[in-house]
Image (tube, rainbow, N blue to C red; front, side):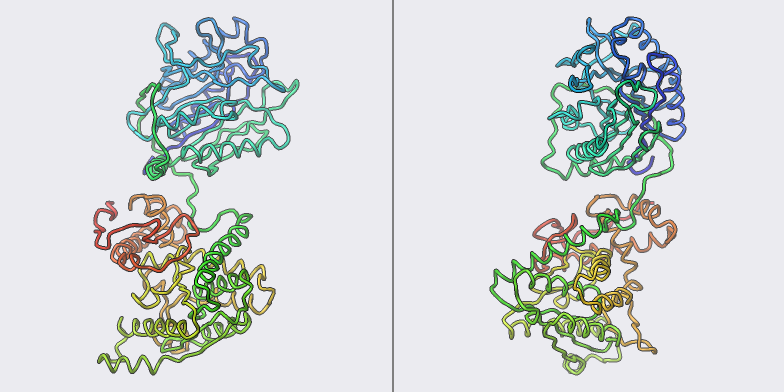
Length: 635
């Protein structure tokens, strides 16, 4: 697959207890399905060749030998399939029986991995039949060939350096230090777990959390294949709960109590990037053996969901909690700054737009935390050439309802005098025309802050910082930027959350907020149109913020190449934008991102809220004169 994606399958076959050949036939059938779908690997449950619930039959020579024959059958029938297969079986080695995973590729047995931790409590009696894994890797003789036998085996694809996997078996994950912890430190990017955990009430939640957390801790992909229908139900039941996770995120999960084969596309280049950035993740390959296999590049459709709004929680159930948390982080940051300075006033320029509205909401929360009256929030509206009635009235009404101290200063005459001073024709609506207004407003805010012994709270957001869509030493500057790490797409959700949940307990506030949400984003620096509406729509100038936020997240947080970002955008927005449009706006994003770094090199303090921050003191250190050419799309 393209751009580092790798499709993997987890399959739960219908098991016939102790009927090794029938089980092998089912495994081959499911392997064929996985290969047809373009999977590079398929993982089957623990002891899938015999069934997990054979009990004392495991000690019978007939079953042990039958499992070996079934494994050879599986290898023979799949030698024409270019896919890695992980199957479970009992395997005898040096007079002891082990619960093992056999790794196959193109008819060859690459290695056999024994289970390290054997459960022998409650309903489990594995030590009755099996021995624990040996401390060192050995060589087993099977079908006249030497085969690596041990837990410390790394399986590496010669054609894809990122496709490196190791194996652990069921209980190994549930222990204090799972073997996969060492596998990952040795270089495994994927962990395959063959499991036969039974089902009891609530166990699925813990199982899922284990897979999620282990994949996050190891910065890896984790595939958990579980036994299902067909196992004995004498005392316990198996649900076939297959789970696939990547760095703490569930990619795919099967329906419980239904034998299924599921697929997920793992992003191996993303995992490599995460490990590269995480300096706490150190490698240690001592005692590990590398086993190489030759798997060709797979051609398969990308089935992975690509979130078009990566800054916004995709789970509706988490949205309210996340919004509340974000506002608290912002407000707590501002609270600390207010209490440190020892002032009781802050100054905010109010335009009736999204950013200044959210900054006001944050300030209101900070004042509540401090037990200060909202009169200490000095809100200043400064109408000029581009101000429309809609934004002007919304700003006034919101300040009135929240009980702030509202100051109105019309700056038209001051700006016209400035034009006269510098010899600028006011009929020429260029950058000078626009920036003069922004800088006049900032000067007023700063001076009012001095008058009231307070400081200016900045309103600019992360998206504007990324694009440099701010006037240098104008709205670019403040004493504390509360929205500095909040992207435009997220601010919309935050304000909607406050409006829908009536956080302020004032119906009129919710109505005002909803109307602000419905207003086009604009700096309102150009005169209104003939109908008195906004003539300068930001997204007509720099492009859709939903695209720019998508580009920003994948460029900064994921460190993806330009071609991969465009590829992902084409998948995420396939029903909204065509490829040409996406490429056009990405080129503009990259151009602006590199050319406007000098503005970000001297931004005010502001709280980090999410995983992406452009603060030069925190997450992003970039030379202002870096060249963009090396980061442009190649295709």
